[in-house]
Length: 467
Image 1 (cartoon, rainbow, N blue to C red):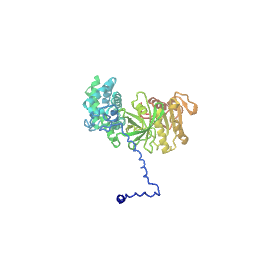
Image 2 (image 1 turned 90 degrees about the vertical axis):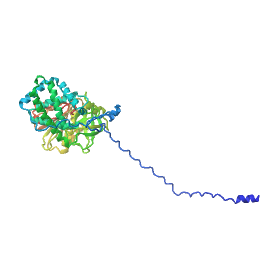
Image 3 (image 1 turned 90 degrees about the horizontal axis):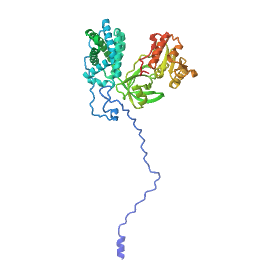
Image 4 (image 1 turned 45 degrees about the vertical axis):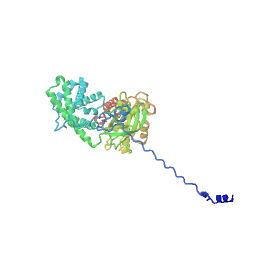
């Protein structure tokens, strides 16, 4: 018994683990990592980068949304399809001008068919050019025939012809036009005139038309070359869109690079929803330090682009802008008084002119603004303009309503041109008109009747899309 006890006692004892000492400070807990702000979402252009400026096709966001197969072949980049205009282009003689005008008079009743035949010839012989034109060609046919009429009207006035065609050629850069395109188009146009010219078409008529079209091609190419110092078009992101009145929206755009322009000018705008359909819109503010641009757009019936901008565009969408155009700008060195008529969204460029005058200083000039609309709710910039008038004694703002009665709060009643004419004479004033086409035409006529000379009445092309 004693031996067994002795054997048990001789076994090695397991060491008892030592307890750690009581800590004198709380354990260090690592701080959570600082939150990383999410990277700003990249703005993906709805336009597909491609070899032609205006190509929108398989693989872009629109095509994916509608399930268009991405394997469809893309068109090749348009190349020069004919020789560039060479040699001096001489204007037609008076006899040739008379012959050309007789041919145009003969084809005018069938102008749409003649233009359709012209485009069919051009697309049949040069199918790569089809991607440069909109899907619906009816408006394009009308515009081209109107341009042809303008060329014939100025055929005996080289200076007027140059003033019309050189800027037009510069605007063609955004479509991807190349100098050789004009020669090929002129050949197709001659053949279309031959088909529909009837009894007026003969060898003399063909020679006269070729001479005029050679001059037209030369001037268009001149404009194309002059415009090469600037981008063909800019991409601009919609950063804000604010409803301003019924069917009116104010869009704020951020261009992808510096965009030079003057108050009173306008730019052609293309949306991704109507590829290759461009509409001009006036800028609604003077150049800003932050580089942002403002457009005032009213959705009009059958206005493809205006309805897309007002009802469909959202912040983050990307539009295309052509270069700034238009001569409705202020000569700040001249110091003449300004009479401004702005109807509806036409108040946008008028307000931009006022902002620019305020920035440069009035230089002793007076600025009279007549702001017209149908109803009081449509005078969406009145408060802003009145605030400017309170700050600057040289500025007077007169609101005008054509459908609702005026009289209260300084609001005048009547049609905008007639109301402005009541305050005549306007000697020493340069007039600026912007708004609906009918208002601009009526306003220009009313001011001329008041003694304002033609050279002192300024407005840019009128139509559905110019503010």
